[in-house]
Length: 148
Image 1 (cartoon, rainbow, N blue to C red):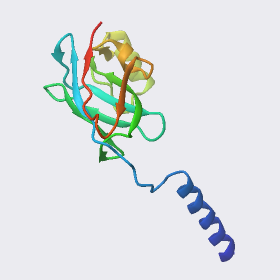
Image 2 (cartoon, rainbow, N blue to C red; image 1 turned 90 degrees about the horizontal axis):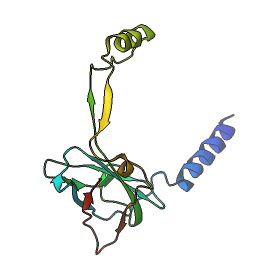
Image 3 (tube, one colour; image 1 turned 120 degrees about the vertical axis):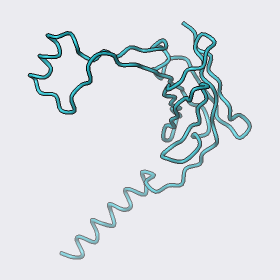
């Protein structure tokens, strides 16, 4: 029984290793600024989605500046990346942590359902939205000037 368990454990570890678990990421610094209609966008989520490898994320500050991190480490996966930028605000009552059907009915009948609204055009929040970044050792700053 111990030999069988050892074999299963070894096979599992080999499978994890072959899928990249524990693999060292080759990351390149990536940052920039997001503006919409010429003004900095604060609190936007910026995601770099590479052709191969894990996506990197960042959030814009009050000046619209972001810095990308991937799996908790600074930097983005080098190469061609599709980029998404999204920012929403929610109005209405706060949703209970674990809403029951009765909670939902009360909120719907009282008109206090939370409503999310995008503060920038939603076309930028999808991978095919047209935003791209080719991350290289020489190209590390990616500014996005969003329009309607």
